[in-house]
Image 1 (cartoon, helix red, strand yellow):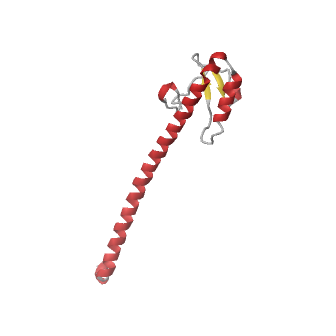
Image 2 (cartoon, rainbow, N blue to C red):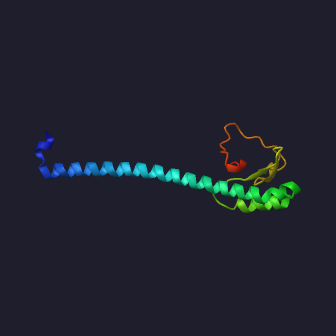
Image 3 (cartoon, helix red, strand yellow):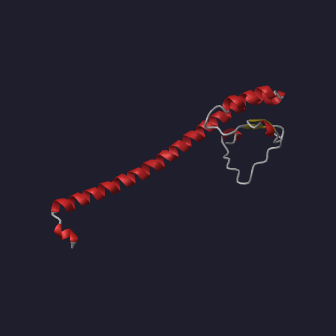
Length: 125
């Protein structure tokens, strides 16, 4: 009944405004979801690349138990602001190097639900 008082131009403007608002809202939701997925994939690939690089260059240091080389690699990699912590574990699950020096020498045991994802080549992130 209230709309009968408005002329056709106002009704048409309200309809266009509502459709435009709906279109913008839907495009925002779709775009933000796609951007989040893309960013997550990019960060995962970056983490995998860092993990594989450390794994590749630390093989000799692990075999010779060169702690200085391992700590240097960990220290350099942890300068990246996206990295919270890094650690290197041997086959017996002993932590050889860790960004938290108090963890070195301990046995690695993943927490329940760990929040870690297995990456290619046996590295975990």
